[in-house]
Image (cartoon, rainbow, N blue to C red; front, side, top):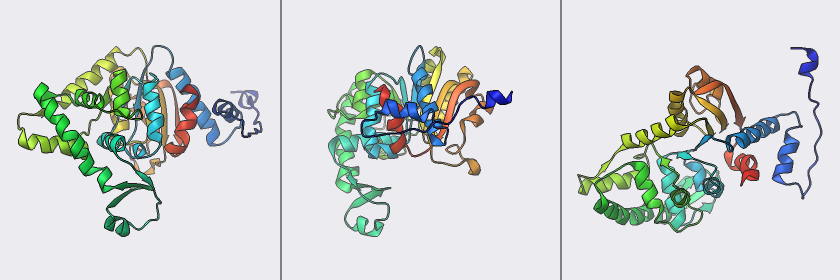
Length: 310
């Protein structure tokens, strides 16, 4: 490569004011040279291509962000029709149900957890979850639904059961409700790891012919993957949600597009910290895919990344 090629773009100063829009700010980021702004701009450009054309788009994320106001942004992404499939954890189902019928509150990372326990309050980072807004509330809402679902049929794919439950929710901010309205599947490979999963177990204890067919979920995922002309993923955080997304895409020789937003570091070998480049070695991301790793906290950065598409 020639020296002149390396020096093709000058770093430009940018200025913002109270009238600067998200779209304008992202354009300025693309000219700033450093450091995270370049990554964020690249992510926005990849998403723009990923959301258009004949591309099957996945979104994956862990549950913790659904306890925050970012739930609304993710719900809007689903409502907008930009997403074709969701892969997440059981806690997402829990928090979405809990916040549809109860309230969470703003707290602080430094609060005394012993004091909170005495008051019947659970702490999720700096989000406060009262006892009455979680376990007993979810049980109250889910058990009658399971009775009705059981009367319809004894065996359910998790993805169908979640969609069926979403149809019962009236909260306009609900991820489950909006996914059901758009007929967008929500896949939860670790369905028993949370309160909703515990409700399934509890119901099974008194209805031993009640079955959850996880392999049917995988069959549905396979159909989506094999039918995709191109595939892309917006992945927030790691764990089982990220892995299930890239795992299934290896069966079509990898993702064509990928935007990964994480705060984890790669030096312990964890999947959450693994850069997307590592997925290339496994055939889960195409070598010539458009991709970017963005190091940053999702509740602050995701609205910037997707704001102009909503």
